[in-house]
Length: 319
Ligand SMILES: Cc1cc2nc3c(=O)[nH]c(=O)nc-3n(C[C@H](O)[C@H](O)[C@H](O)COP(=O)(O)O)c2cc1C
Image (cartoon, rainbow, N blue to C red):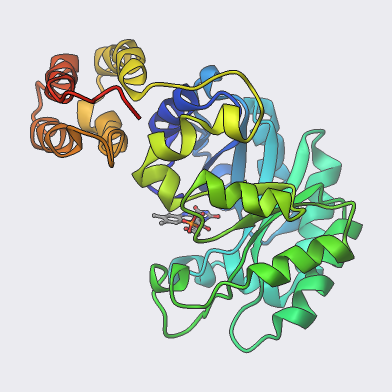
């Protein structure tokens, strides 16, 4: 998620769950290939498994970007066909590509030929006045034929005119049923559902209903411990549950290294604000961190002080 799931956020989320697949923010192929912005590919090896999401619509450029992503070590290259923002539309990336499945197929085929890692697509169920019942199966058939290994479907349309990107994540109604029916039509395609999932319980319901994966966006960002700390056990069947207090301790050396390299605390701590959401001490933690972290000299001691406020709450480690 742009401006959210940067490498610091992903490092935090990986400490919470060893198994969940993490995605980068969308990186545009032109920025990598023409702009040489290779710093956009930086990540820590601790983040594995991690997928690079690309934006673009030029098959040759996307293939070159995919090669750069594979060389950097990413486990998967994902093509964004779901983002409705104006800036993205002007470059013919994102959700507008739902109108041009032939082009998406050409992009996937070229990327598939360029790399060995999985090539995947994230899409909507349709855009504007398209009929999702008609266009989604056709879109999926085209990308599968082109070599797409897995797809994540955001279960709502995007309206390319008239709605802001934020409204496009809330207003068009969710159609989970349609996504589930796609599994019947494409039994061999690995299909993940996305959109409006706010708990692991809901995620399990989708999995039990036959889907292969669930992508959780905003809830995982705002309440990372709720979504991720029991995911390894409850979704992946592993004997592991993380504790947000331990995770804060594990972040301290990472924070120190970032500050030593000239970084600022808030670049990391902004992703940690929701760590105790819904738990005792959540408000004190959030306030202390958000107020103090912008100060130039703020360091790990601020995080420890915020944690001490959480620890003062009697049931802080319960949940
Ligand atoms: C701030 C923000 C940035 C986003 N950036 C991206 C992005 O770069 N690529 C993408 O595929 N989706 C992006 N999304 C959409 C989410 O991945 C997801 O599809 C959407 O929020 C619906 O899922 P959710 O209800 O679980 O959040 C973004 C969402 C938000 C809130």
